Amino acid sequence: MGPILGLSCFYHDAAAALVSDGKILAAAQEERFSRIKNDPSFPLRAVEFCLEEEGLTLSDIESIVFYDKPFLKMERIFQTHLDNAPRGFQSFLTSVPSWMGEKFNFKKLIKQKLKALPGTFRGDILFSEHHLSHGASSFYTSPFSEAAALTIDGVGEWATLSISKFEGAKVTLLREMRFPDSVGLLYSAFTYYCGFKVNSGEYKLMGLAPYGHRDSERTARTIALIKENVVTVHRDGSISLNRSYFPYERQNRMIDEARFEKLFGLPRRTADGPLPQEYCDMALAIQTVTEEIVLKLARHTREITDCPNLCLAGGVALNCVANGKILAEKIFDSVWAHPAAGDAGGAPGAALAYYYSQDPDAFSRRPSFSPYLGPWFSDKEVSAVLKKGGRNRPFPLYEYKKLDRDDELLDSVATSLFEGKVCGWFQGRMEWGPRALGNRSILADPSRPEMQRKLNLKIKFRESFRPFAPVVLEERAHEYFEGLGQGFAPSPYMLFTYPVACAQRTPDEEGPGDKNQGAEDIPSRLRQRRSTISAVTHVDYSARVQTVSRTQNPKLYDLICAFSQKSGLPMLINTSFNVRGEPIVCTPTEALNCFLKTDMDILVMNNYVVSKKDLGP
Image (tube, rainbow, N blue to C red; front, top):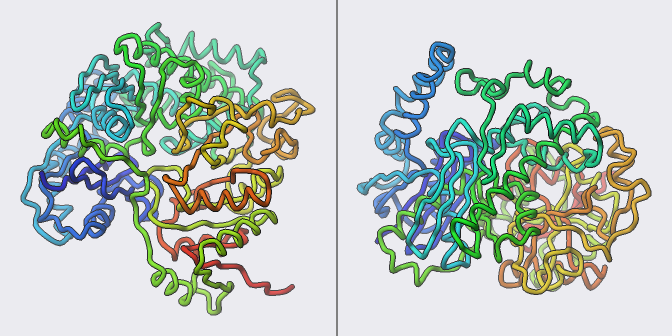
């Protein structure tokens, strides 16, 4: 079978992936090329990259597989409007014309979009079911030969979650929950209510939740109001939404703001508005309800599949706190989540699902998976960018040198990190998925309490309450985090939270959640030293952990080893190489520009070390 191109687009997180013989050869999100965060448009530049990376043209592609079935999605949209007539007429006029136009014939649309690329595509254009694409993305990249798959998101065609059993190339769908009942849309509704952007602000809501008062009367009352009025949570984890609070079936609105405000006695927060304690408690309440739902779903999945292994996918699988609760409850022996669990992951998932359906025997020789699937740049390309300069400056604001020997480079960078400097780290192929995994990263010393605030406010330019993740040597993770001891699987993609080990904690004078006044009082809370790795310890003593082995990422692993020799710490802060509102950098030019407009101290691209010039007063 020839190469297969997987596509996802038109809703959010458009992406392309190239698969051959069951191996993902290249994959990237369109946002990395267009520089539009969560870009939903047709992933033409991502397709172009995938083809060029492997020296192919469209003529070499045997099949193109789209990540969902447009006609089923169109059926859902039409049926929803009919069921809500005449109230949904205005929404009907807004959404349906796009389907009656170019989207009505997806095969023709895809062929038209691809005409801009070399070669002529003569193969088949096929369509995978949305949740099958999600499940396949996780299972076929996992280490399992058999597993249950739980996929949870906003909505695909009709399904909003699915439970399947994967046995080699055989897939059996066991349960579905259907629109309009949706765990993903429930969480997004509260994301919107708390003033964050849907489909990108859910991380912020999750990060805000630990600032809530877990044992307060207000939080308990809010949880009760949600479960008594907004959503009914059933024993098996399925839910029923009270549609009077969610007008998205008949209007282009996420929530009925008046009903929400009347129920909770709290106005919808405006973007970038103040964050008093009430919103922290609200975030904690919906996070708690979501965790209850996810745990019930996980238990039901184990019950009906009788599988010891679980694969997670769909946008809700990016909720690493809920994922961590599944691990902590030990419902399954092993849990795996795809690094691009959201819609972007549907691109390789669709291609892999089709490949193994056509050649089931190929599963026995399934290749291993690596998340480093994006563009890379040679020393010659990096050098050309550094000589040319960045940000259209008439004179260079930086100086650079090349350290040819890796040991010399790593020792130099480790020394800078030990001195409290912040490093932009640009190496090899770009990561696949929304998390920085050590090739497009900003790195720093996790033991410095001031580093969390510095990174948020002076480098990332984002809300000060946002936590940072540690990247830790796999074999030493158990020394710092509970649940990563002997016999536990590593956490290579930053998709699970773990408690910081008690031995590493330092007592918090106020205790988590006692006297704080919400996110507005974060500066004083951030100054409290909660552990030996204070900058990656969230206020609830949790951390979103990335483990790394030498096999997985040799250069990053060796850098942490060099830092450990100086500091005694086998880890670094790892956050994505970007600033608020922008995608992760892809090219050397983007990395240099980001470096120059922030307070980063050094930039390392391949073996080039860049530092800012001292321009004097």
